[in-house]
Amino acid sequence: MTSATVHKLSRIAARACLLAFLAIVVASFFVHIPYVWGWIPLGLWILIGFGVNRRAARAEGDGATDPAPEPVAVAAPVTGRWKALNSPADKVPSHGTRAYGQTYAIDIVAEPEPGSRPAFGWWPLVRRNDDFPAFGAPLFAVADATVVHARDGQRDHLSRTSWPAALYLLALEGPARALGSARLMLGNHVILDLGNGVHALYAHVRRGSLTVRTGDRVRAGEPLGQCGDSGNSSEPHVHFQLMDAADPVVACGLPFTWQGIGVPRNGELFEAGAPLTTPAS
Image (cartoon, rainbow, N blue to C red; front, top):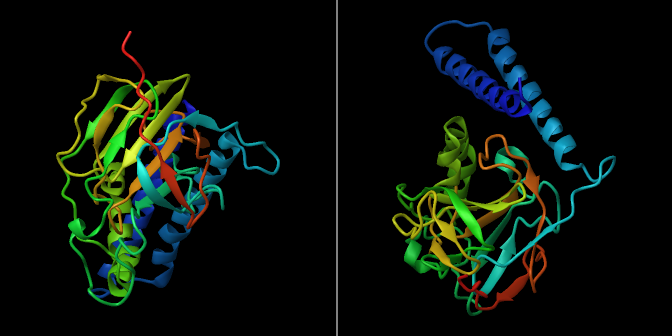
């Protein structure tokens, strides 16, 4: 049995254990069920999840006993003025998990002018996507590549940029999406094969905005689609990562560096210039 198969089966088993735990919790409101029956699947879920993360850490290099691989230099996926969030420059794994190959992933939000991005607070509870300058911003190929996956049929939901909405996202919506398939977490997304075992993933793409389809060849700097707010997202933003396989369920994350920019730290503003397109041969 291959490592990828074991990885996928482990994630399926972990999801099944969590579903069993939730089912027992709900059923306990109607019939008497000993508490131990709930702790068993919950404990198995934790143990399997820990094992999956440790396996991924060994494969990626944990930075302590195993050196991390060298960053792959690619172009930036956007243009203009942006701010980095959940950056691997500050911690690894950057999003607190190695699931879906996102160990070295980064989130970026557009801030073309100071104060142009709505602030987080108590009110309004949700905002329309058009209130955020990132929504509709063009996404570009970071290198010459082949499109191996492209999906843009999911809706762009309202923002989760208030305390009550963020609590809903963390406590209810996020875990519910995690119990489903990877696409519920990623939302609309496109995956590029850059060659040499390197794949680039763009998540939370705007519904209906992709201009490429599976099998297309793209050149560095070519438009792919637009930034959106689909999937497990709090506001319109770009989630970008490199990984070693086309399937994020079994992929390990790879570190990146953006040419001319590097890896911006959390809260750091950076300016991405116009993409340098590769001339057609």
